[in-house]
Structures are given as structure tokens and as C-alpha cells.
Length: 583
Image 1 (cartoon, rainbow, N blue to C red):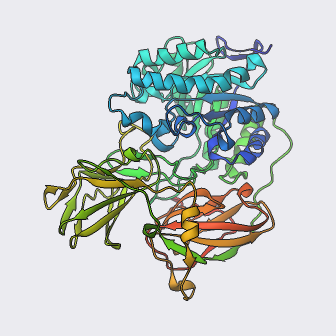
Image 2 (image 1 turned 180 degrees about the horizontal axis):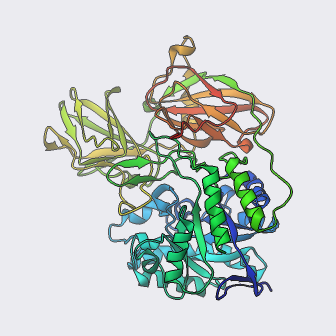
Image 3 (image 1 turned 180 degrees about the vertical axis):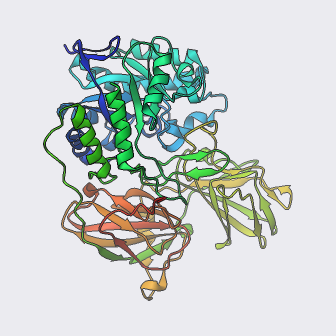
């Protein structure tokens, strides 16, 4: 039986000193057919361990569920790590941050206002226990002590930046041990103030999260933990992007120098991210520190391995640094080869509002979207207004398009702090509401989405709204209702909100990069798979299409466009375009 333990100065693998050289790959951000490729390329960079978060809300979209099929097959992912000859670190949260929707916490959990957030409140602990037991059923048999790859298991995640409820942390520790975890338990926190102490317990191994001034951060960590191996559990070598900003990059040479300093100091490391992947569908999170900032679809993170799985300059710089300290395989992954560019004409389209969306009346004040039982995406509010005037709300979460008798009359944006719209006359009001991503960090985790009441028309509350969720799990209703576009040139455009369809031929699977110049905002789908959001404000200009989604012969492209396009074409680009950086 193999063992892994915490020594006085080192991690101990079978009682021998061992340095963790880990890279983060989130299985839920990568097409499962590509997992083995990404893991193999981590090994070729010189890494010996793969780290991943586990997203509670993705595995449990409804209470009592725990999905493990397809891209959520954590067991298969860990088995592939083992097959590659590498170790694994599992970080199940229950809160993961990760620029992921709601920080990984399921939105349904907070439909009960008495439930706590990241605390020892009984309702929250009961739900957490059910989730953790499901995760542990997959992880425990895959520990190194049972012939598997898992060498460490994290308790919570940067908890010291949020709270210091020791009873909550102890509950997670006790549950893990009771379920059979016998590899080391650890916590990670930023090396500032009292975060490391607040976010941990005396019995847990403490690690730091940082991306610069490595020696200073390690010294801070050593002051608070005199013995045991030093480790940076998140070595931030890049950053994420928000809509409307530049593409964040970090200098490869500078990042490599920090990594070299860290390894020279004898520390272990987990590179966050080694391979970022993609926020497919509606999975992106958001920040709100006074201004709401939703995260983009790409989670490339300027990581050593790009969003589409190719080595970057940072990959080779890190590989050279690791080779100074440890053996590195001689094999080197191939760099990206440009794919052929092509243009696809849009053939058919249907107005989103012309396809029946089941709504139901909700008595009283305007309700949050959670009453629909769908916790991501788009929603429709409807109401018959007796007259026109100024319609206002306490807040809009996150973006609302207003239509009077089918005619657009305005947009309200949370980002811009907009709360009121002028309705020109009485009539049937429809509001298409977009949840742009739940806040993943800080005190606004778990908040409701939708039109926040009271809804006031000329200062008087309007009640008894109807609400329904737009079901995009299947596009069948839109597909069957779509009609051939009327005669017009390429520049005739497509009106919105609408769902449009096109067909393109392919020789077989292969990565593509969908470019939507001339389109404004919405989501794109390949063969029914939601690639994620696009937005003309950038920074990203292409959506990554994982090769396994493409099939030989005819393929379907669908575009949900919220406003309208200046063209009836889309294109596949030769490579990714994530926008201009700050240089």
C-alpha cells in the first residue's frame, strides 16, 4: 500500500520526501473526450499532479441530485489522471469561487431564506453533508492508500477571506474522516492579515495562494506554520476577463521567474491554471464590488496550456524552469496549426417571443426568477399595464429587455445601475430577463436574480406578474418554428430576440473558433451544445468549439441573438481571438 503524509519539512510519498508539482485542470470546463490530452500535456511540462475543484451546483442542479455523466464524471477524470502516472488533489469546496456561477453553490439552496452561507447553520450543513458524501463516495476509493491517484483533499476554499466559523470547518473535517479520507487534509488562504488562521484549524495543513513576491509570501506562511512543507496551492500565473475590459495577460518570463524562486525555496506548487478551459453555457460567475462585472465565456486565463489545449510561450518557459529542478519528459506537445477559415450563411430564424414560453401567475410583488425552478439563463416576465409612464425597480439582476405589444422599448442593465424605463403606453408588457452569472466572491453569493421589487409604475406598485423560464436545454421548439429568412443580401441582418439556424459540412471532429462579427449579444450552439455567451463589447471575439462536438457530414449552428445582427453570416476563424491585452 502506498502512503502520502505531512512530514516535518516535506511531503512524504511512501516515507520519502516528495515535491508536489501540480497543475489545475477543471474537468467541468473541458470536453471529456479531451481530458486525457490535457492531462498528458501537463505531464510533458514536468508536472506530477493534477488538481481540480468540484462544482456542487453543476453536479446537483436540483435538490437531491448528483449527476456524474459525461463532463461531470469525476471518477473517470481521476482514473485518467492515474492512467497517466500522475497524482491528484481534489478541492470540493463546497464553495470553490473559480469565477464559476455562484462560486459553485447551488442557487436552489438559497430559496429558503433561513439557510446560511458557508457557516454552521443547520440547514446549510445538512445540504453540504449530502453533497460531500456524494463526492467522497467517488474520491475515497481513489485515494493513494487504496491504489488511486488522490494524495490530498481540501477543506473549504480560501475561507479566511470570508469568515472564521470553526464549527463549520470542523464539520467538514469530521465528515471527511468519517467517510474514509485518510490522505492529508489541507486549507488554502491568501497570506494576508489573519486569513490563514481564520480559514483553517490547528490540525489542518495550511497553504497559500499568490502569484507574485513568492519568497515574501512563503515567509509569511512559515511564520504561521513553523513546520511542514511549504506550498502555494494556487500559483496565479494569469487572470480571468470580464466583459468590456481588455484581455488579461502576464509576462511569461516574469511568471517563470516567480516559479523558479518558489521551487528554489523548496516549496511545492499548484499552478492555477495550468489549463483554464471554457465557461460553457451559462456557467460563468461574476464579481460585484460595487460594480457588477460578469466573467466572459473563455477561461483561457493566459495559462500555460491555451483554452484549446495548445502550449504557449508560458508553457515552454515553465517547462524550462521545472527542468532546472526536476526531470522533464523529452516529448514536447505540438503547437497549434491554423484551421481553415470558412463562412456559414444563416438560413432560418424565428422570433424568440413568437415561440410559446410557459408562464404562470405569481400573486403579489414581482417575483425573483428562482420561483420557476430554473436557476440559469433567460426568463420571461409578462404583465398587462393599464397605462404608460415610468416603470422602476429596486434593482435589475442582471439585464432586462422590455417589449410593449412585441415592440422593444428599452433595456435595463445592472452593470450600469439602471433601474427605470419609460413605457410609452398601456398594453402587454414582456420583459426578457438575462441572468448574466451569479456573483462568485464575497457577500453577494446566494442572492436572487430577476426584477427586484417593488415594481412601480408612476410610483404605484404593479402586482401579479406572470413569469416563466426559457428552456434552452432543447432547441426543438425553436427549430420547428423557424422559417426561411426573407429574401435579402448578406447585410440584411437578423432581427432579435431570435433563434437562427445554419448548417455546415465537416470532414469529422476538429476544433473550430466561431466568430460573430456583426452580431451583438447572445449564445451560440453547435449540434445543440451551448458554447456560451458572445457579446460585441468584447474582449473575446471568438468562441471555442471543442473538436468532439463536430461530426462528419452536416452540423447545426444555432444563434440566440438578443438584439439583431448586421449580417446573415457567421464565420469560423483560423484560430482564437480573445481580444487586445493591456500592452
